[in-house]
Image 1 (cartoon, rainbow, N blue to C red):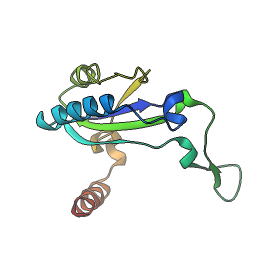
Image 2: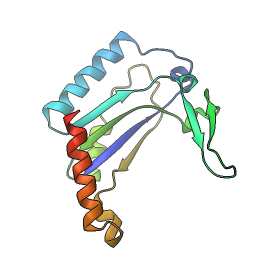
Image 3: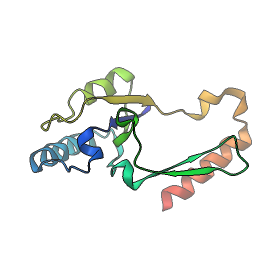
Image 4: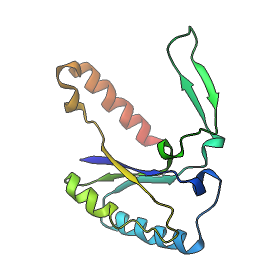
Length: 141
């Protein structure tokens, strides 16, 4: 099973405050543990929403672009991991170990990544084949 572990933004991260050297060191060690355990597929931090944009669909003929920053800090993402583990319980145990030296991590969300099987009969053999082809092509990059 693959899970996306979503680090929620904080007032500090939205203000562009960078983590301390101590937290960056601890986070590096934690990421190293994830890699050595063979569960980390990806992981990145994100810049503040002031650097971002949202594209809204519906209500108009053309999608509407809204530049950041965005008001609701608690709804924003500051970083993520993609972890491959055996169960939700296992990913929860990993997340409980995320370093929080600066005290800025107030909430981390865990979401299972949908697999082809989750889409039932709507995921036809042709669609599966196309998805597998795209994944293989993407992996080359």
